[in-house]
Image (tube, rainbow, N blue to C red):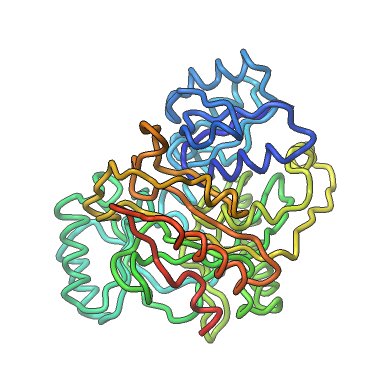
Length: 419
């Protein structure tokens, strides 16, 4: 098989690596990719939004399956574009991608189909939003309705923080059109997990669960980011709770999408919180999560290429997962997620790989002697061991061997499991 992966981050590097480990796959291309992926795939300098060029490349290179990583091309309709030209592509249609592209769409779907989630209201007017905040009290959650690169959520501990978030998003258009409408919802308490599933024509293949750390600093302090690290499995969450989430959230969502005329194919990402009342949805994504993919996908024992073919051909497949446990830590540029200071030189990453660690490239570019930081999150470093504690120790021991000038990382990824 020939595979085209669309995207350039750590998630796409993990997808490319998994295909690279599949005997059924002969060639992998990543567009636009980044230099750090060159050992796992051929880099193709085509932007994720250049649909015509990507489709032409798929035709010219006899691509069997195109796998879409990021949300922007999905929400813009790349699957519809490829499908109309008879090109096989895995991901949701533009209509189905609204599940991530519009939080209001997702909330209305959940309300209609009785899928447990936080109480909410949607606003386009600053004063009406503030009145609702005053009525509900704090803590409270303010979300940009559209895409905001994982940064459009404010967990406001005070009324002042909530009002500022509304002013920034609606009044000052912090995220442009994406925040012209906001969803304000109740603050829920509990453990958060990421529960991802492969979906096609009503078939659901759930993955092993993971937990990521959204806050920038140790102890879950600081601003929300796209994710500072993740681990899988999540020992403190029972298999009974996961089964309940599958039955009350994953299955009804897939059926609900069919019933409203937007059947879902692709990666259904359910960001869940385990409350005293059971699992509830915080958010849906229409693609793999980042950094969760980097600790979930490598645990797949099955041939990824064979599985994708079987899934898209509606043939049964026994998906196998490793008992090995995996933990990954994001190395970010100073100032992330707000005032990102690019340009720091990364140390010799081969030292990490020689120590048996996995290195996934996100925001890097080639430097004189190695790699230079070219984004907020530069790389994710992960270890796979028989226990999470061993994986955590191995990652931090490896990171301690190097100097990270102009970069930072959390020193407590996985702390909820061990506390």
